[in-house]
Amino acid sequence: MTITRYVLNEQTKHPESRGDFTILLSHIVLGCKYVCSAVNKAGLAKLLGLAGETNVQGEEQKKLDVLSNEVFVNALTSSGRTCILVSEEDEEATFVEPALRGKYCVVFDPLDGSSNIDCGVSIGTIFGIYMVKDFKNVTLDEVLQPGKNMVAAGYCMYGSSCTLVLSAGSGVNGFTLDPSLGEYILTHPDIKIPKKGKIYSVNEGNAKNWDGPTTKFVEKCKFPTDGSSPKSLRYIGSMVADVHRTLLYGGIFMYPGDKKSPDGKLRVLYEVFPMSFLMEQAGGQAFTGKERALDLIPKKIHERSPVFLGSYDDVEDIKALYAAAA
Ligand code: AHM
Ligand code: MG
Image (cartoon, rainbow, N blue to C red; front, side, top):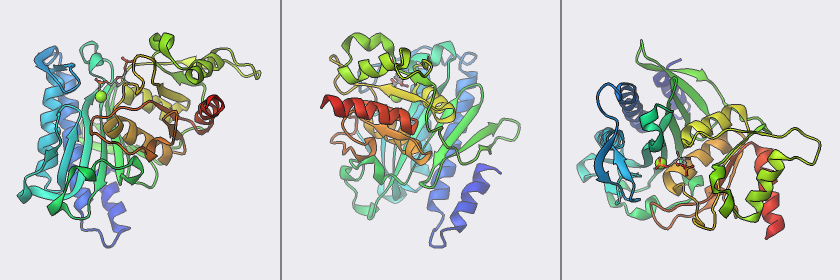
């Protein structure tokens, strides 16, 4: 089952559908294949290292970040199915020129985990898709919407294999690129996250500045008082890889706020929302420390939020600690 056949099959379940989503997705898939090939060749093609530019968060851009952003902006605009694009790498949203406009807004991080590029650790692309009513008269408000309004979300992980995980609002499916065919094949149908996990994933180097509930939660992971075994710690520092492992093996991934960065690090629109959408679709939960992550209403396109996401029971535990501290 290739991703193309899978999406076409899904389309037949919606007789009113005119194939716009299928076309949009095929352009996203093309972008993922292109970036996958670039990532694989990066060491050889001298794509590693700095591009000499700084992005909107003041971070140095790598050549691969710049390339991936160009690839996705081109793939999405040329699909003729998008009207607004928000990329982590671009300070302003891109309003697609009127002749090429369609009904979808795409928010994306073209290459997440950039600190891992030069040492060959897994990195990925994250995307979320909103649908607008009137694409001829769009405003930025169309993307400043809660994540629960997304119609689809996904990521592609450039790791030991190239894996695309997608949800269009009815479950989560994983596809692996067969390099000999150049096609994504359905390898992980209907992914469900285990109800409880044995792994926690967080940058513990920030522990000094954590709040009470996060500190207590991690303490409980290491020194459980209910007779259960301690959890294992796994932290790659690439959200796509850390979330992918969490989705398949269960457990919890967290990027909490702390005294230095009360809003944490991860960006709401193109990191927190798509991953929270996938988690909920797989039977897990995503929480900000205050509310369900998908209920957040972003005020700015590059807004950040703390996030705790993963297995249902593990997220329940952190929610209980925040409720007790409130
Ligand atoms: P980036 O978008 O600049 O790559 O930053 C996002 C990444 C995530 O992939 C990852 O979860 C996080 O930053 C790791 O941050 P830290 O190095 O602070 O642990
Ligand atoms: Mg990122």
